[in-house]
Image (cartoon, rainbow, N blue to C red; front, side, top):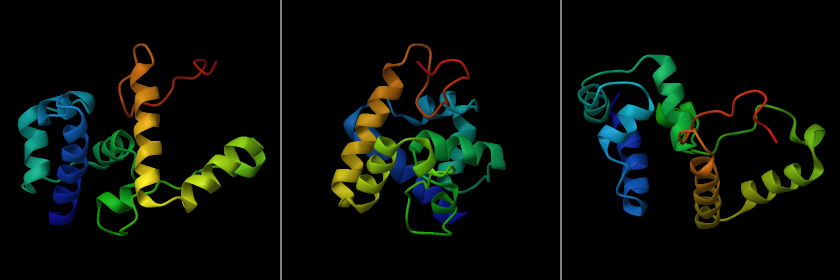
Length: 133
């Protein structure tokens, strides 16, 4: 639980350095828990249920194995065969995977910006069916 607490705090603090709105209260509201509950997650005094761990991973654009300390790589692997979806998307993921860490972080910041700019959608929230284009 200590690794989980350190990693969610580190992810939130990284975002907070770029945008001060990323407080514990803000993250708690995005994942639908009370601020003291989220604070307990960051302090390692309370373990969240799996659905909350999934929400945090989506919000921070990392995988659950990373948050739980099962891997040191925060990169989410695509859950579909990208080659079958679109050649340009496939090229993007290949470029992302092979990019230096600084470039990956820049690409993730851009993706977060796109997500946040969508009307009525919170960061980390999945796109609703029928909302694509």
